[in-house]
Length: 373
Image 1 (cartoon, rainbow, N blue to C red):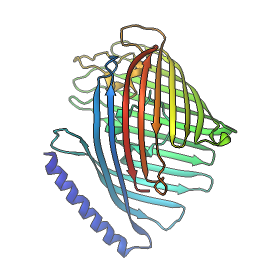
Image 2: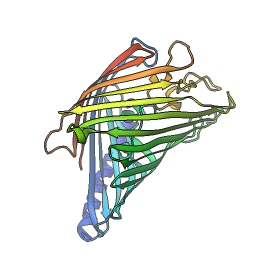
Image 3: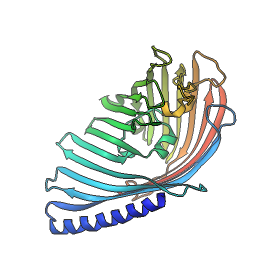
Image 4: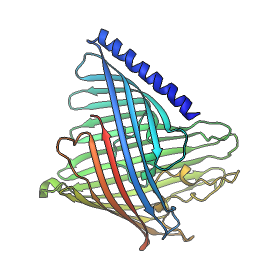
């Protein structure tokens, strides 16, 4: 069935390309042909046999996401685009019959006001357009790979010393077995003094009913932080420290009836030079996912449908409560190939996870990402 629909979609895209090109040829002063192309291959070998936070497995697959459309207007300070595309994804070795993950279509506005640049996306568009700084407590590596698109709206504002974004991602439509789910998330950061930036990230996730599933869970997460970056001062690619506070407000209306407020401090340290880097992220606080193993009225566990972040932020896998610690240590190599900096990214990494001074497992990752500028 997926292949049948996939053929229809490919034919429709080709027809759209030809009609858009013909239309652009007749109206070259106001309409131009536009295109975009994303490719990503990811190898992620997870050896988590030392803990019960997540199972050991290997994620190995690739996706390609072409899009075509039209760009409208003569104003050099503004760009209007309407794009249609396809997101094609395959887990290597998998037996899925169809590899078409999603059809994308969106409107994009880029406007230059001088010192301020505005971007707007509306529709179904690539997640990579959201460029804010988010802890892995917000969004895990798996989410970024398997949920490649946002469905809703994104607004970004950039200034010489600051940037801001806010987005709405509608993740589930109310139905017989489908919960109504949506997330509003935002991030911003600004340089307030030499080497010092202040910023925040936040989301409000509404995890609501379906016809079968009763109850609503409100999941709110806030992360104010400060960042120091001395890389340019000392002549290396990066030498930074980010200190912040993660504060959650969570409310299981049906089963608990009141808010819980887990939180904790997080310190990120990063050093990079000659394209080789190390990142250490240390979190000390309470279990940030207290309802992870809770079940609804039909016995379905909330799990990663309620929490989008890395499951290691649960802190305890043995039933303990109270303060805990999670440490994520990453070594990586990210070569800059001359002439390809704008459209090619290669990263090789080894990531080690520790909870309460106990080794929990490791990841070996290789990613190749290509995007036409």
